[in-house]
Length: 320
Ligand code: F6P
Image (cartoon, rainbow, N blue to C red; front, top):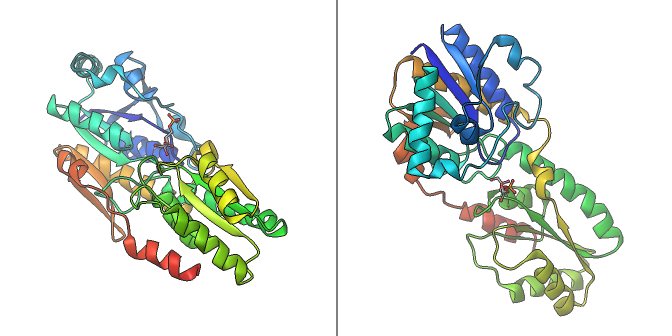
């Protein structure tokens, strides 16, 4: 394979730049020409494509965001859009593509694969919602950001003897809440995978307060059905304790990537180039038990992510 492309798509995540850098530099080392596609599938459809050299990815390893920009493309969801995407790649002579993004972005890669383009998918999302990989690029950084926020909120929550509900991202996946809740010592974690029992939650807050707990931190994933505002109000009404909401939102998507995210991004980026060089079939690349793995793209995306129930139960035990 002589010419490959790389794009980032969907919500950005810390470590995407490290992945782009690895793809570009490993690709050039392997004798390939590497093309950057701007704004994900949107830029592909608009032909926003230019060649990248070693220098163009200098000084980005430590930066959050993505130098290629990103977008969610409605146009690419259509048959017409996908056919056009393939014709643009053919126009540029691009035979293989590295797609860095979450579930929807990698599914876009499947659509191109079905039309004859070799696609290597890298799991770039803070949500950690892909079933085939233990971790996604950006998740570790996002959880570290949440942990930092919990520590700060804890100070003021304790001084004022309040309950604080911290809403975190993750779309339909509770992993950010779960990991941050366990490592951050939350009183309770609410995730979409497990039904929320507001009475049980309020009981727990009151039992804790009666035992002398000064305050409570509740981590709520955004995918939980009850809104953060409604939950905060209900907790305050039922427990009689001052309760405040904190929505961390896009704070979680920025920042310098952690060691784990840089390693995952760099190693999966290098693997993607290796596979394209071998003219391998399309793959989803990730990490399982500390090893870099590559699975059939379509099959990998069919794997459902399961929540770690033991981790959830442990939070309950530690916060009694
Ligand atoms: O998929 C990453 C993510 O940050 C989710 O956690 C969140 O639900 C969504 O993107 C927000 O998307 P947008 O950037 O389009 O508001």
